[in-house]
Structures are given as C-alpha cells and as structure tokens.
Length: 130
Image (cartoon, rainbow, N blue to C red; front, side):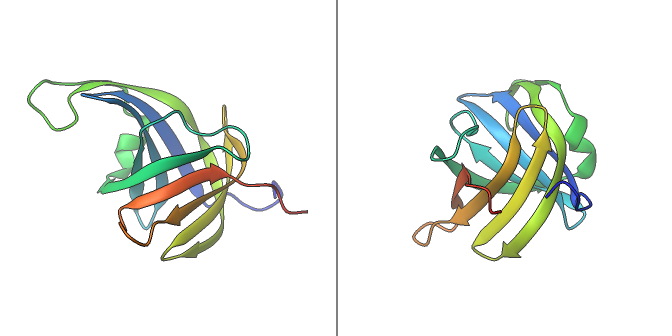
C-alpha cells in the first residue's frame, strides 16, 4: 500500500485530562476528524479499542502539545504520541479503512461504528490484504 499517495496527515495525542485517553485525529474534509480512545491505541491485529467520536478540530491542532488550562474543556497536558500520514482505503458512513504510516502505528486500520450508539466506534489494526 506504500506506493499509493498519502490521503492526509494523522496525529494521536496522549491527553492527560480528567481521565487519561488518546485522541485519534485524521485530516479529512478540511478538518481533523477526531475520536477519543480510552486505552492505548492498538499496535497488533486482534486488539480492539473503543473510540468515541468527538467534535472536529481545526487543522492547526495537529501539532498541538501543551497544557489546556484548568476550567477549559479538556483541561490537562497533551503530548503527541504518534504522527504521520495515512492513506484512505475506503470510507462509508459506518466504516473507515485506512493505512497508517506513523512513528509507532503502521499498517492497515479500521474504524467501525456501533449501531446502538453511533458516537462509539471500534478502532483496530486489521490483517493486511495481499
């Protein structure tokens, strides 16, 4: 899949807010589509993580590291956990499949929406197609 041109950038920010979580952000539609992932993102196939869709963020947030002050939404320390580019394989309303080319995460990943709660998705590394 590396021969295809990257679709856009991605970042995963480790967010030490009221509860530690990781923010997955994909550059899409002129914004950063964003999901909060309560446990460390999966590095191996078979590991599935809940990813809760949150509001889109502006593109310039892709490089943000620092402290969000107390009293503001998301207050706490934010550090970049991983970053790189991604290549979109397919995008449907309930399933997004993409290839990550990051420092920590590399390979084919998917986000699949839950039917009962549409803000909740499963985030996982897939077995790579040949």
